[in-house]
Image (cartoon, rainbow, N blue to C red):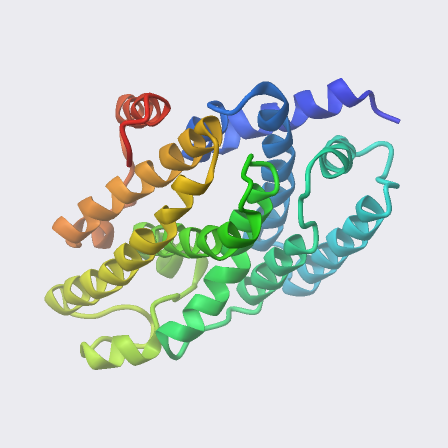
Length: 284
């Protein structure tokens, strides 16, 4: 079997390389919890990469089914010995109360992507967001330190949904033109006079994006109550990750046309500043 240290090192390498926003929060955790979070992220990244690949749909669905089988092995404490991500995840799950079945929901969401699912209403979209992001919130909560885990679960779920809606708005152009995906609810597109393919007059699309951004803001307002239930370092981690995404949302609300023209991101210095404020307890 791969050495445990090597397995965790590989997960942290993946996190540093791929987690452009989440890494700023993860690095604020104590070393043992940081490694566990890296293992969670590394497997979530694997699932996302399968869903976003250009392989045939049948092939991607088969790979996702393989992830489900591997999770069963991890749950049984028998991870594939040559897979560093699963070896690290198995160890993390033995150390912390990580609800591994939530990964199954993440796979469900990626299967929706593979099948080019569309969403009639905002409530339908929330179901998808709960699968691909609420699940990550609940998985992460297993690593965080809290004495009120049952109360914190729904809040972690809400915050994950807020982050995912922000992601959807940030990537609205790329998803439509490159991935052929439309996450904006058809009901809302129609109400603003936009097409089912996610296109429409700039003024109408801007108004629609502001509507969805306002809905995301409401989810942040409720989900961020999670912070008061966490210990200092876990709180800093969540505040940093949520703070970066919420600042993106503020920019989107201020000027929706930006995401209709390009993919929006924060500069590195601003992400680092948010993380530093979070560690200092300055809030989101």
